[in-house]
Every structure is written in C-alpha cells, then in structure tokens.
Length: 154
Image 1 (cartoon, rainbow, N blue to C red):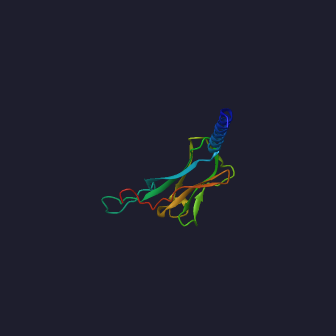
Image 2: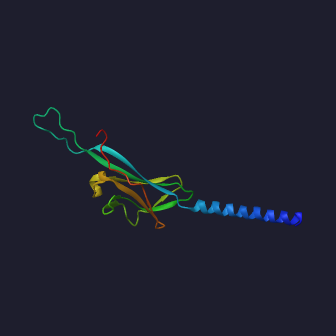
Image 3: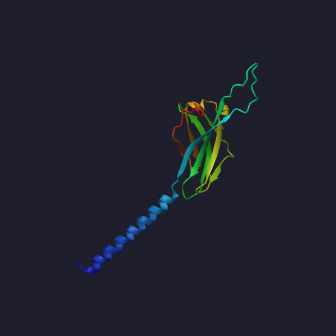
C-alpha cells in the first residue's frame, strides 16, 4: 500500500472519530438531568400556649415536621416540572401539587420546591417517605427514601 492510501485511511478515521465525538456531546447535552432531594426541618407548633394549673413551667409543645421536596436541574437545557410530591414508603398514600396550571420551568442550575407539612400530608411523614417530580416529558424522577425522622435532641 502506498503512503497516500494509508494517509487517506487515517484522515478518514480521524474525521469519523470527530463526528462521533460531536454527536455524543450533542446527545449528552440534551439529556434530562433532574435530581430530586428531600430536606427536613423541625419547628415548634405555633398553636396557642398550654397552661397547666399549678405547674411552674408549661410542658413543651411537640415539634412539627416539615419537609421540602426539591427538584434541581443539573442539565444544560430548561426542563418543565408538572408535579412535585411526596409518597409514603408503602406507596399507598401521598401528597402532591397536581394542577393543570402548575407547570414550572426550571432553567439550568436552578430548582423548584414544594413544602409539605405533616399536618397536611395525610400520612405519617415521620415514618419515612420519598419525594418525586413528574416532568412534562412523562418521566418521573424519585428521591432516595428518607426517614424515619425524630425531632432534634431525641
């Protein structure tokens, strides 16, 4: 084989490799990269004070558990989230913000959140649950299972 033929095959191989790399980079930049996580918080119940006759110090009110389900866009394109929610570890009861007008755009590097208070969740959040986001593409992204939870200092 002549030198020109070998050089031609080498140039064609380098060209094909360049095209393959370009296609891969474009394909990977279009992938949806949404991460869902759950953040917890505890706060004292803001109800009316409890007064006990003859007690020098009223008992402490139980803490209320609140969780925030956060969907984070780690991709390079905007994504649209239709539903954020939380579901019990058994999968039978959950809380979500499903509404036709509730589609949220998340730009690259940004996030959207749903705050779920245990008093409105409809299930025992302290026993554990998972957060999720339903995207406009129909894909559902789940968080890791979290819980059980206990108030700080207990």
